[in-house]
Image (cartoon, rainbow, N blue to C red; front, side, top):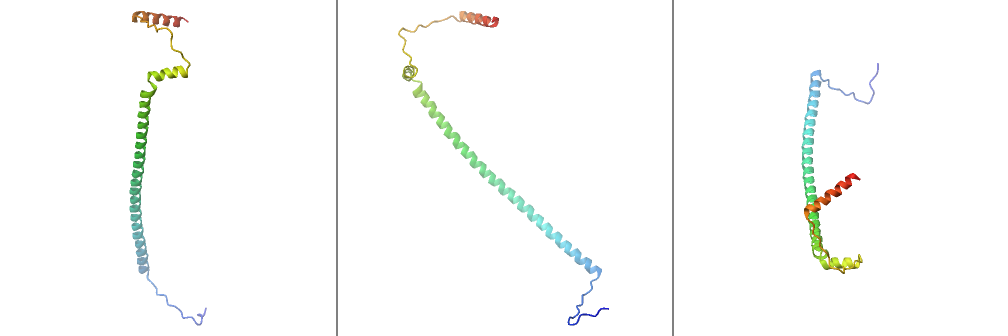
Length: 138
């Protein structure tokens, strides 16, 4: 047999009965369960809040993008109307066409008066039909 160590007082450990031990374990498990439920509820609430904030963030981001695109559309429409006005005012004028024909294309005005030919629609249709027949034969 062993002798107790000298200089040390032996500690008395209170003996718990099985019933007290089971109650303590049940209480600890119940406390852990409550803490887990509270944690899960807080996690769900914070997730819902984050999703709500993310949705708001995306809405603001998309509305800014839509506004930018609308301003781009307005700029493009403005540029288009300016180009159309320029085409209608500068480029289609008769003297402008005459200048381009003379300077850039080296075309000279006709010496003779232009001759205007009028063709009856029935005769024109007959010629078109003959041309189509000739194309089909070849």
